Image 1 (spheres, rainbow, N blue to C red):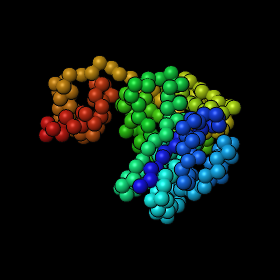
Image 2 (spheres, rainbow, N blue to C red):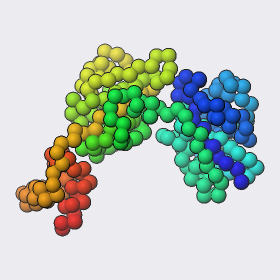
Image 3 (tube, one colour):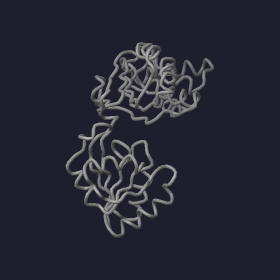
Length: 273
C-alpha cells in the first residue's frame, strides 16, 4: 500500500521549499498537480523528472481512481499551484478517498499563504478563523460576514483583485470602519506588499491604487468587552423577547454587547424555552 504525500510548495519564491519536499518529489512514482504547467516549472528548476498527472476541480472524479490505482504500486505526491495542498483546493476530497481506501496520508509541511500573512499582520495569532475565498455573490458574501460580526478571533481570507473593493465595502458595513486589517499582496514575491491599517484606510488606498496580484486579508476580531454573567444575559434576553424581538435578533444584539458569541446567546435562549 502506497503513501500519499501532501507536499507544500513555494507560494512565490522558489527557494521556499524544504529539502525533504524536494527529495519526496524525486522519490515518488508520480506527482498529482493542480496545474501541471505551473508545477513543471518548479520541477525543472530543481531538475526533478517525476511524471506528472493533473488533479483539479474539474477532473477530480476521474483522477481519483487513477491515483488510487497508482498508490497500489507505490507512493504519490499531491501538490497545489502554490502553498499547502488541501487548503482552498479540491485536495481534501482526494485525501478522504485515499484514507477510505486504506492508504497512508503524510504531510510534508512548508509554505502556507494564510499562516505567512497571519504572523506578519501584527494582529493576534493565538486563535483565528480561516475562511478561504469569500462567496462571489454580494448577498452571500454579506451573509458570511454578518455571521462573523461578533467573532473575537482573527479572520483570514483570500480575495481576488476585481472583488477586493466590494469585499472591503461589505466589511466596513458589517464590521465597522475602524476594524484593523492587514492586506498582504504577492507574499514572498518581488513586489511583496503588506498594507496595515483600518478597513476605511485600506479601502481609501484602493480608491487610488488599482488592486493587482494575489491578496490575503487578515482582519482583527470583534473587540472583547467585559463578558456578562449568565444571569445578566438571561435577564436581557427575557426583556427583549417579551418586547417582541425574535430569538435570532436578540442573540445578535446581546452578542454585540455582552462578550458572548451569538451562538452562545441563542443556545441559552433555546435552553430557557
